[in-house]
Image 1 (cartoon, rainbow, N blue to C red):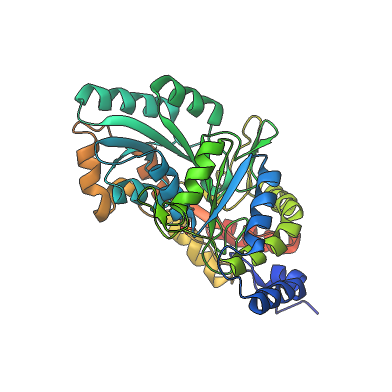
Image 2 (cartoon, protein in one colour):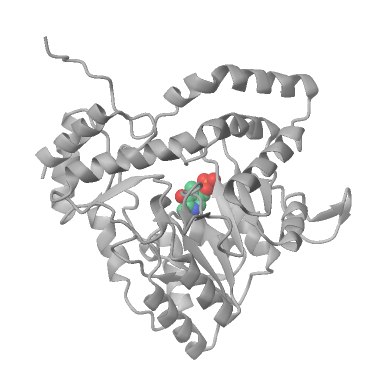
Length: 384
Ligand SMILES: *Cc1c(COP(=O)(O)O)cnc(C)c1O
């Protein structure tokens, strides 16, 4: 008899993973409850050492979220009023929100259709335009490794060096990704990680970290996450409350034991998708020297109407899908003003706008099996 009730397919799956490590999570959390070291407990330092070792960065500083990681990294550079911060128009809102919170101006840059990441030619053009308009100082580039795929860091670093700008890697979706055999965390001046539950390394709440090779920066990050204190109650600079909880660090330590294998599993699943979907939709292409962390698996459909049909067909067959992102940041009501302010003569952002109509994220987590991937692909193809 055919199996009429196949197991449900989830976009993300944190339960299968939890089942593997639940006893160890319970043991570690119980130890924290016994010790009472809820803030800056030993699990935080242990995790920071593991994050540094895993990524190859010299220093890792645990913080309260990926957004706060970006904010602390920018605060440490003194980024604020009069500064232009270049970032892709096609990314999560947090990337743009942070410069605005600090009084700086985000300058939206278009992305490449092939990688979904920042377009280098467009970046150079907008840096030149900011200089020409002469109102803002080019200060930083935030490269985002969208969906887990590394941005072109050697080129971004070169542009930042030439212009004296800070190179910040928003690696929130990409912990574990690598370029030319070196993991993210070694490429930019600093890299921000998010441990939001659905990221490649996620906790059971909010959390984040900043990776850097620079010891002075790491020390500043530690100070800024604790109100800018130099020593207890001596406040050297304006900071924030941006610490990582001990309990979240404990959860992350348990999940670190699975991460290498999970990254391999994500890559295998991406391979299954590419095999079945090539020729039907545009699948993420290979990128020279890059290893994606496969935080998400997104394909491109010809247009919004086809995407709508595909999503309906998938839903009917019990297959979830999602749109990251339905709107480019320069069209968000909160950022339209900043967009107009950043460049008075801003060139259009056609690729970011088109991707928002065409992109579709399929289920991606390390616990999908090949039969489930086949079901996702059949449902998607049926809707085309
Ligand atoms: C998730 C995410 C963030 C923010 O991380 P939080 O931990 O949710 O604050 C920032 N940038 C990108 C690209 C993200 O995907």
